[in-house]
Length: 378
Image 1 (cartoon, one colour):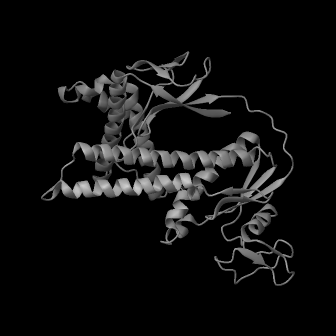
Image 2 (cartoon, rainbow, N blue to C red):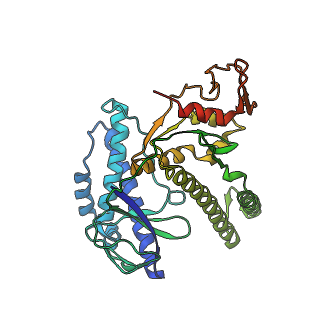
Image 3 (spheres, helix red, strand yellow):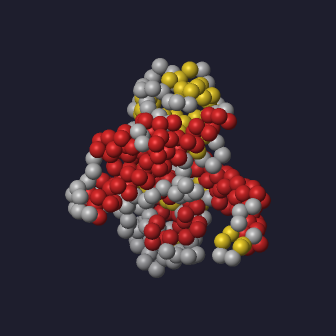
């Protein structure tokens, strides 16, 4: 099995400059490739292969105008071209009907908003005690030890707003797990993140005092920076001062902290569920797009990160050999009585306790839904 390992880098100031150069080159090449593909498509040309575009970049590097491309590894440009071509081809094939998968049209990467990242050649990647060799950058210290004497694939270096990280895929032996034979149903919600049919309830981390304090701090910082922008307005343009840069840095770090807290909570929840080693897990299929249209629920739904929850649960189930089943979108898990199977058509969202008029069964609405999901059969 292939497992990803993500480790923080500890570069020197000079190495950090080179990391920024590499990330900037990858972004520029990605945007250049998309521009070439779009111009070619506009004038009725066929899809340009990444090999042709790579040859064009090799010629470009010889011109004085583009000599700066030689300062970073040539594998960064090669992979950026491949990534852009793959993304554009997926969208183009879906649009023309060549593929049943419909991907979104790739967008140009913004210097301010896109995540700085680039590729490092896996063959030239070398590892020693708490250090890693990156092309044209040299030996960079790491905070943890990356496994040695193994095959690495798809190494990527990225910046999360505060620190630089390297993520690399490593081949590992898949452990054999002894499953219990239990079937678990998981009902996802906003009041609580997940209600499991074994009785466990996993709280909504966004209701914790820690997250609320950070969100309050974020609102204050955003109001503060907004006032400073208005104060430093010159005609139709805004002038950025040192204080504005400092505040924006604090806002970015607060966003990062909130994202990490939510991500960590999802990892802890999904790991705990999978470590019970059931034979089968059934989750509901939520219409997240529809839920996001409700202006009163949109923020809460977005913060719960339901898609990320299912993604983590899926790969962890694969590692343990657990069958993961998604119930149909129109399966009425909340409306069915777990005891007699009666469907309560008039059930409202405000009804937190499920009471069946047919058999008198009473239970928590979400717990009843998780029991129905546990007994679900496609």
